Amino acid sequence: MLENDVADNKAIGSHGSIFLRKKSEGLKKLCVLTHCNTGSLATTGYGTALGVIRALHAGGYLDKAFCTETRPFNQGSRLTAYELVHDKIPATLVADSAIAALVKSGTVNAVVVGADRITANGDTANKIGTYSLALCAKHHGQIVIEERSPKELLNSEGGLGKQVAASGISVWNPAFDVTPASLITAIITEKGVITKTADDAFDIKSFVQSTS
Image: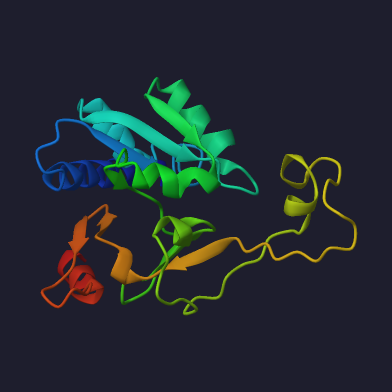
């Protein structure tokens, strides 16, 4: 299982790197934004979305990686930032609330995130904040969303420290959000990259059948 997972991760990284370079309109190096943690700490040793960034860096095609802090549990600032520094990949940590300004500045060439679940039409469920990252989705709700402990918002250190919020306040702390397929350019898998058909839709069923 270990060997298979690492091989799948590296295949995702390779497919994603090639795809982004083709879509980069002649840019020699890319600045890529990612969310949450999809690296070796989330997989068996290489990563999925972070594997794409690793592959770009290894090939000399990465200018810089941007990682979000990923509140309220801070997987980005605690885990992704650690992996990027450990691998000596040029990277910048960005506050979740600063993402819109960063993207507006034109600094980011691509956004690569993980997907905990993908529906047949291409909608994806991923860590909370991905929906915001996809810039005002048109619809959601096809997938049941897990809610995490209220303490992650009420207490410091992602719920591990002292309470910092007002006692008695209610909490809504979803773990995921849904990004509609209409905002997604491509879905990168270990079998290849799924792109949209002529009618701007993902034909995931046909892709799965052709690669199985």
